[in-house]
Length: 137
Length: 151
Image (tube, rainbow over all chains, first blue to last red; front, side, top):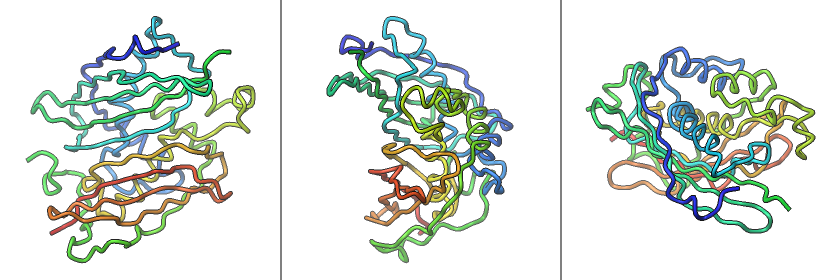
């Protein structure tokens, strides 16, 4: 179970390619049965794939932190997109545990993420996430 | 400069509202979409998030949910689309944040709303945004978005 000693741990995921087909698959999933509003564009929340997904996978695989996915709730999310990503871009993402708090039988883990396009050093996404875990009795 | 609307190959040609024509209290065009289990599965595949609370009704009930639930980030993606549609395209959506307060269930219709709370001198509008389900649950709360308006 995460605790305050884990604050500051960083997880890096380099070389996330913005695959056009994957971006369109997400756009279609968001559109459901409807048409994609901006065909060919990368949906803003595709950051879930190039920023959150690969860094959180490393966090979830960190046995010393020991997050139990069965009890995990995604509580809050923020995204900031200083620059747009485009199909074919290659992105490096990092995540850092910024706080761990326990109250009312729950553990609150806050993370800050950043995704950078190394070719022009542009920050393409900054994000924060709040993950909530039930604390074992 | 990368990221400028004019450089964006996905630019739809839809123009953002003009800063001079947007006033505090203006509403984002209402936007709703019914979310199906098939859509949730498609989102799981697209995002790589195959947590069984989204896909396996028995597991979802085992952990105390009424059944499978939509990914919060799917709901947020629909909210982002709603705001971007009002703002003239994805390129004009600069930031978005929210709390995942209540689950959205398969078959629910998500109803996205937004209201302009400020417009700064650079032409960036801040919106209070959120989403409810057609069952009356406030699913996305404490939402804030910033969008770039045209000059």
